[in-house]
Image 1 (tube, rainbow, N blue to C red):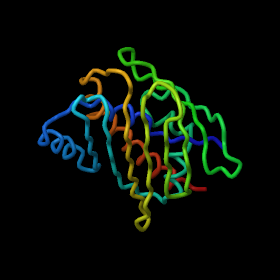
Image 2 (image 1 turned 180 degrees about the horizontal axis):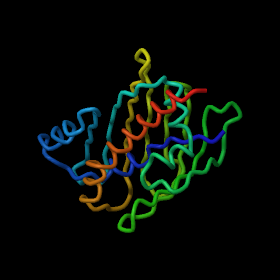
Image 3 (image 1 turned 60 degrees about the horizontal axis):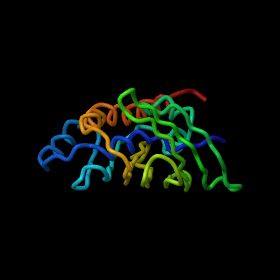
Image 4 (image 1 turned 45 degrees about the vertical axis):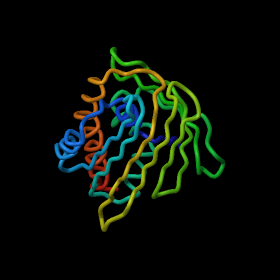
Length: 195
């Protein structure tokens, strides 16, 4: 079974978003009325954290199957070019996964390994093992709410290299909400598909 924590792009986007006054950050989150997104950066604007939530009209098991699938991640995550499961625990409670992100010609290509720990069907935790990022920790928490799932995502990271502010501002404005909406659309489609 190939698994992946597919919100790698969020990790890339969150670490270099330009710092903005509190009013600008509040405006950012209200622009995405169906999503809850928050970003916090250090004073040097080269490390930080992000959190996001989205309500999905699909069972938690459906959402789980998407956020732990390499094939689905390649469909949903902008810039994710490769995902390889390097090692899987005998009891399938964790995996070591190699990711390659190549977002565009003007952004550095990122190759790194993470350890994804699974508490099915409610939580995925990740931590950087090696590669181009200096620090990477994150998680997905899936909460059932009737027939819906509320997906909570959080990440804390530092790239270890400089990234232009404008690149990440564009990613946060367009690609982060686009990816969360794509996850929701795909999960709701899979939920409706006859078995």
